[in-house]
Image (cartoon, rainbow, N blue to C red; front, side, top):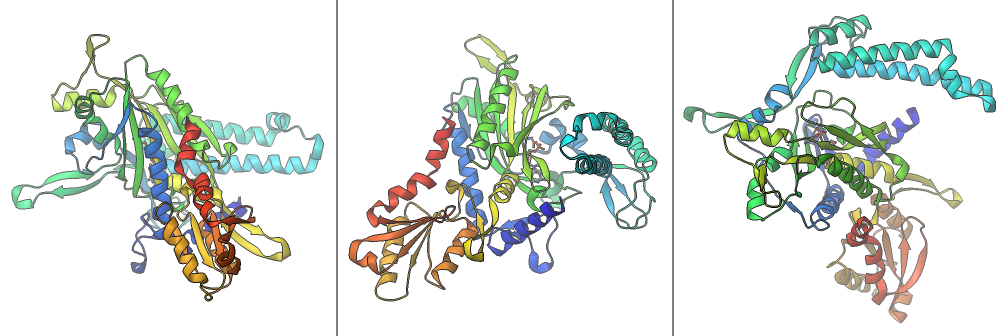
Length: 514
Ligand code: GAP
């Protein structure tokens, strides 16, 4: 685990050193849980968004996109339940004056018990060697059994308190488990209070009577309130979907792990409108379809798992997360939710407008049911970055840091390098750049040794390097070096376009989805 934490630290500093992600407002000592994307980061992020957008809108003729405003009528957030229920339970330590999420303190306590169990099992595995029966040991060892009992009791109590929204009980759990503040080390806790995660601001001048508006905490509501506009103007028939990519804002209290949990982030959401009663069929369809989209990137099938929710929000009748193995464990990257007709019915009620869909086949009107797929761009970015990063020891003791980014997502597709800065080689290299740049993001680099130039491109995940040498002037061939294998082959300049395109085009990735 400690080793993984070290790797994660290296990834974070690599992301900064190579222009992927910067702390926001860094020269003013930063703004917590807010990040900026640099010159390579923005390209990688745009490629992720394009892969998602085209995977939705090009591959499904019944899915269209929209781009709704961040500001919306405040009643929308009342109707959706965000004003009343989008809360985190907070607790303060009176000595350190630090604020925590009560649920996170308890989750960390649960994780500590889990750690103790795993340590016991690891010790026994070492002691017994090949003859170790892990299942039997977990079931019969008294110390492990005691930890499991403690964990199960705590989990049950915690889940009940969260479900009942019982803030006193959450505090009591913290007191009973003798959880201390990590900063002051004391148990001097305040009461637990609810804290709404939405950012508020005011629209209009105060003299005119300003209205409190919210920065949207999810993009989905912009889709719900436009569903009938799109359905009517686009002559859409159920089942159909609306996709949207956009910023969302949450005043997260525990903001940690780099871009995993941010206060300003980006979501890619798709609401799929279906007939009542058909929602679970479509839920299964989207669950399967979304995992395929992830796996097509080739980051490793074993790095994904579903986490089906057994406790559902009151409006949902099925929900699952797609989790990805980050250096800090399996974490949610995407949620797939069967949201029933809750949101649309709420908007119908609060707006007083009829937003029913007339189904010509059934000859009846109804409020559609909705399957939602919701993925964080930044979390997706983090999963791609973490699984691509490798420190490689090369033959001869040399080292390189390489990002094995899926080629269609790489910020730069190829770099063209004259072997030396003379004899007409730079001009020839420039001519190649001028030809390739219309289709691929192409770098020109003539500085430093060729080895150093390769390393620079490896570090940002450029799939191909093209080297122009004296032979090029004679026979119109160049060396094409592939990032992962580092293999070099001699190819004709006229073939470059086709060779690069085969690997880096988004089309080949989309074709895998069928
Ligand atoms: N409309 C449903 C919805 O917003 P969610 O599970 O709260 O559901 C969906 O969020 C996705 O948005 C998550 O799976 C995650 O990828 C991303 N996300 C949520 N909160 C985030 C945060 N604070 N920072 C970065 N990404 C976040």
